[in-house]
Structures are given as C-alpha cells and as structure tokens.
Length: 415
Ligand code: AMP
Image (cartoon, rainbow, N blue to C red; front, side, top):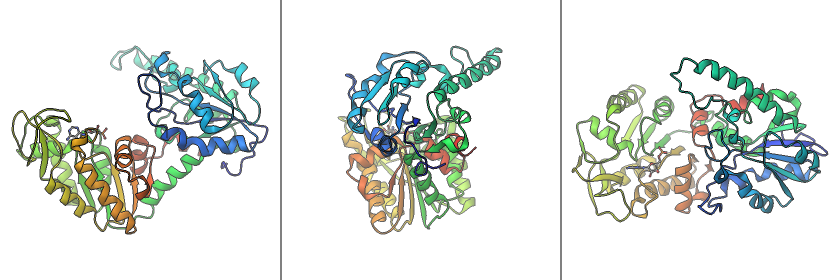
C-alpha cells in the first residue's frame, strides 16, 4: 500500500516518526528539522479526515522513564507545526483511553517508546557474556512482540516514516508491521523520499562518483568505506581518520585522534582501493592546535609531522585544495562526516571547502546526497542546504542503505 492510495478518512493511523530532536537544558528544541521532516505525512492523514497517533523515541533512556527525555516537552511544538490539537499519552503502552478520545482530524502523541526496553528488544542489566544472556534475550523478544501488538491495537493502519531508525528492528519500526494486513501498512512521504534518494545514487550512478567520508574514527565507518570501494571512482577520507592513515605510514601525529589498533585496517583500505581502481584521496596538511578548544593556538603542519602537544583539528590549505579538486567534475556525490572539528568556528575551513565544492559540482549537474547528523549540520551552518541535491535525515540508516542492505523498517512494510 502507498500513502497516496490509502483512504484515511474515519481511520486511526499510528505513525512512527523520528522526533529525536535536540533540546537545550530548558527543554527547548534547538533544531526542529526532524519535526518538519515528518509533517507532510502527518498533515496528509489529518487533512484526509484521519486521526493520527504519533510515536517516536527520544535519546537513550535505556528502558527507563526519564523526564529529561519526555516527549511531553515537544507536544506544543508539534501542535503548532501540525496545526491541529495534539493530545499527549504519558504511557505509550497504556494509552487506550487517550486513543478512544481521539477524533478525526486530531492527533495524539505517545510518550517516548524507549521508556520501555521492549521497544529496542534488548535485555537490560545483563552482560552479553553472561550465560543467562541468551535466555534473557529470548524472553525480551517475546515481550517485544506483545509491546508491538499493543501499539498496533490502537490503530487501523501503520505508517513508517522514521528513516533515522529504519535500520533498527525495533517494536515500532518493524515488529509492529506484523500486526497489520498488507493493505494497512505503508511508508510515509519522508521514507519514500529517502529511499528514492538512495536509489538515485545506487541504481543510476552517473560517473565520476565521488564519496567523501569524514568524522572522527575509521572503526565506525570501515564497513561503508570497504563497501564504497566497490562503487566509487574517488574516495576522499578526511577528518579524524586522517591521523590513523598518517600513523600507519610511520608519521608523527602528536595528540591527534588516532586509532593505534586500526593501522592495519588503514593500510588494507589503501590496498583495496588500488585493487578496485579507486583513487583514494587523503589530505597532506592539517591545521593543528595546542588544545582541543576553539581558542587554542594554531599553525599549519604536514599531517605526518605533528609535534607532541599538538593535534590536527582541521584540513590544512593544501588538503582543502586537493579535496576541492577531487570533487570538481563529479556527477554523483555522497558526503558523510565533517573534515574537521567544525563545531569550533576556527576549525571549519576544511568542511567549508568541501561544502563549497559539493555545491559547485551540484550547480554543474551532479546529484549530491548529504547524510549523517554532522555533515547535515555543516551544510546548514554554511548556508548550503539549498545548493545540494538531497539532505538525508538518516546517518546510520543512510549508510546501511547505501551499503545495499535492506532496512528492516522498509522490509517490514513489504513483507
Ligand atoms: P562521526 O560521528 O564519526 O561522523 O564524527 C563526527 C565528529 O568528528 C564531529 O563531531 C567532529 O568534530 C569530529 N572530528 C572531525 N575531525 C576531527 C579531528 N581532526 N579531530 C577530532 N575530531 C574530529
């Protein structure tokens, strides 16, 4: 079923969204991108005369009630954005009364799903090494089904629109779909758009295809890096990863972030790139600092000659030029992860150079896909959001989809 075909009038729809928005210490939303992302789906349902039950997680409460992560803090903002009354159910697994009171054209926001360990389906308080772990996991999986069934009982149909968590097989993102008929479950507009954007990159690759991977560590990205080596023409590796590569070649990296136990992985990436005929692009110099601070003293050094007491926090001028040149002329671009500690204003130049080059290539006809919270924050910070082709709301989900893995949140709807 598709959201455009479904007749929502007089029906109750339970919609999984990703309202895991950042809050300041007073509970105010600091970035409402995710709420805005879900609006087309929610608005469509209420405009058609349906009632909508909105469910989401927020943060990592680890299966326990935590008032700092209560979705009650965003109820008003959701109501304002949606333009219809939004009630709140303080217990997502005991919301029958609130659901019964819900009228067509109205909405109900359920409390944070992750206040229940059943949402993630992982046993809590027991170590993976514990001999009793497997039994505890089995028991939790059974409870997860009950939890999903309870959520499903609130509604006539299920809409999955949380791309950011679509790579997780959680109660609300996948298991719940088992309790709906094929004709009563569907992807929301955001999911449809995200899946389409990935498809644009994967099924119709216009070359050259340039991927830019940044961020802090090689270890968390190695899966996608190895996978991309079979797809791209050029792979730019930047950010904190630079120093693991520099060290692997015997360089001095001072206090830079470096995974000493991953040097062999770095060398293997270089070998694989050669075997696959992929041009691996690494910077040569860095902006180094004498402290991990925006106000630290800085200078430029080769990334393999960083003195003790100093650390590389951004790409240096030569590296920026190398990156920009590598992006020039690309026809497909994937960017995940910043080229430096862009959160500090004095260390944004590397990420900015990449952003500008991606925008330029896009203006010249490339399809550019930006994904992962930090690269999206970069693009927003530099005012380039409308100069790239598509900004994904997913980090891990986007990378897994690009790896070619079927996302549980998508599979559950199809199945
Ligand atoms: P990731 O979650 O792996 O994509 O990493 C994103 C984080 O990497 C951002 O918070 C950046 O500040 C950080 N990062 C980028 N470059 C560096 C660097 N040279 N040293 C330390 N952290 C970095």
